Amino acid sequence: MSLFYSFAMIVLPFLPGFDGYFLHMQNECRFTSGDLKDAEIISRYIFNKVEYLRYNSTANKFIGYTEHGVKNAERANKEGENDRQHTNLGTCKLNAENELQHILVHSVQPSVKVLSVKSGSQRHSTMLVCSAYKFYPEGLKLSWLRDGKEVKTDVTSTEELYNGNWYHQIHSYLELTPKSGETIACKVEHSSFSEPKIFKWDPSISDGDRNKVIIGTSGLVLGLMLSLAGVIYYKKKSTGRILVPTS
Image (cartoon, rainbow, N blue to C red; front, side, top):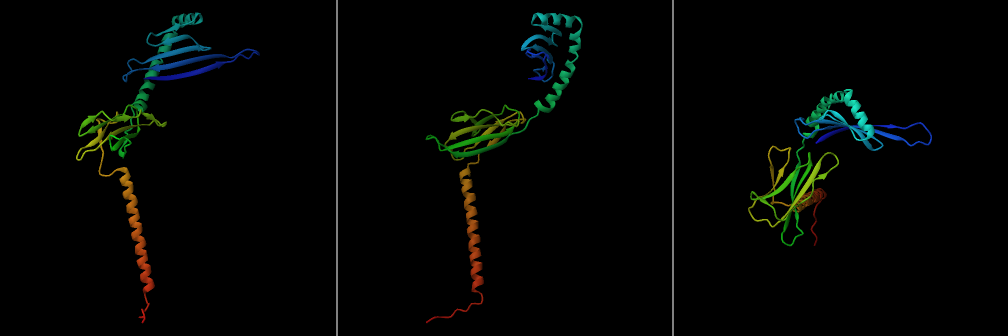
């Protein structure tokens, strides 16, 4: 991993007929380990897209890449500008530590759902979908377990998808023909968990059946309410009326 800081300055001569010159000075704070022992500063000096001078805190010296850059590097090293530049390494490490503590090591546990849908395969009757949403950072792994053993056939998965708001999502699909009494689960591994978590599939009711039950129950309740209202209305209309026999 690396932190990157930069600033740019454009110099435009105030003379008619001249094109502008572009001077770009770029500072980078780099590190690849969490203890920051290998942290270093790289300062680049670029003129009209050509890097002519660079400072490296690991070597603690300026390096020239053009004739002009070599002369400036020799002068800067001789005058002690390299040692003054090296003092910025402390700021680099401080900023890197803050980034590690508050951003890079921050994690958000995923929201996981295991659902069943109708399979389009002729070999299997069911397709299970294991979906993990809103997790950070990336690097989440999904796998299927059948009676505790990992399933590797008839499994497809998407790539980790970036939501655009720091969060990610990923989906895994398992086609199968369920057997009575077996346990099917989705195992989720992520840095936000101290250990992998298991999410079991409940075959007692599928999503389609669940919707049917909800719709059916709602219809039954509505029907009972209408029937009750009809009975009450009939009772009120019948109150006080005398039935007269007809011949």
